[in-house]
Amino acid sequence: MMIPVMKNIKIIILMYKARLYKVAGKYGINLEIILNIPSAFVTGSVGKTTTCRMLAAILSENGKVVGLSTTQGVYVGKETIRVGDSSSCHFASRLLIDKRVQVGVFELARGGLIQQGIAFNGCDVGAVLNVYDNHLGLGGIHTREAMANVKSAVVKSARKMAVINADDSLCLAMRDQIVAANTCLVSMHSDNPVVIEHMKAKGFAAFLNNKKEPVINFYKGDELIGTIPAVEIPASYNGVFRPALFNAMFAMALAYGMEVEFNVIRKALSVFQSNEETNPGRMNFYEHLPFKVLITCTDGPQALEELAHFIQGMNFSEKKYLMFCAMGNRPNQYIKDMGKSVAGIFTHYICADHEDLRGRPPGETAGLLCEGLIENGVSRESITIASSHQNGLVIALDKPSNNDLLVICTFASDAARREVLLRGN
Image (cartoon, rainbow, N blue to C red):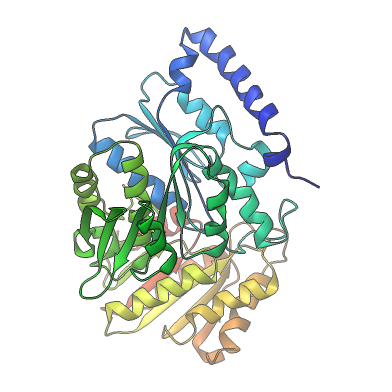
């Protein structure tokens, strides 16, 4: 059965236009102006929210009032309009009728794409970051290929620039479906042969050069548009946290596709920090306790592998603790693989359920994380299974001593932040 994003895209566009006409008429807004507001769509399995926030920061640095919708909420400039998952064109279309909005950045998650498709006339620039198996089995999607088909709608709808991950074969296969826009390939490797060939054909490319110190390079063909040393991007923690460099390359390419000058892009990325104000719940450090706390979101084995690489690269000398959880609607092996991804990195592990059990009985998801750790060499004595997410936070914050590190990986960053802040009072 063909999914709605492919079968009914014209109907969906007409429905959104009809809705916009109705609301625009009510408030005396010119619909053609709304439909011509510069816009960016961002999708993928992980990294969407941070990429959107980086792009919004660049566009704001360029003097624009940004309408932003993500899995965390809806924003106009610095004002929060809505809190909660807003990663669909339903919320994007609402932002377009706000008279303050001059440019839109819209995160489009799997669920919204399946249920609602692509709204209005598509976007100026679109990106697909990656296609993992985070949501297989949900919404009638059972293979990564089918998931890629869903996400490809974003880059197919781009009019000016489509940005795709050249290190992911499923993303790379989307190139043949990009008709109207220029294509920019993004790679974490300077020797990616596909990127090299793309540049020979005068295509756009962003890649990481790791020969000495890591540096982001941005080219059109053999013409260097600009470079950004990783140490100039605070969100990357001196280049040690690789996902931030990956996100920055996508944000850079999208912004350039929206006609932002490179010097503005570089300046904005040089001041973008991953803290609770600018990027809440993503790589946020807290220093007010006797020990260091890091709160972040890691959805799946790949994200946890990158976190483990970061922790090893930072060379923390004291004990390291990890409290983590998983979504209950993921397959058993997927949850166990999350445990595998961080085995051997931490001194002690606290396994917990997510706040929303997603169909599993209490303790089952935490137990699977524990199994994944044990199957990969972690002793049972080094693991605590929490009775709930809240119980996991309490246990985790009771464990560390002076100068230790506690990492809290959770989708409920607000709850974690409250508990951490309470300990400092």
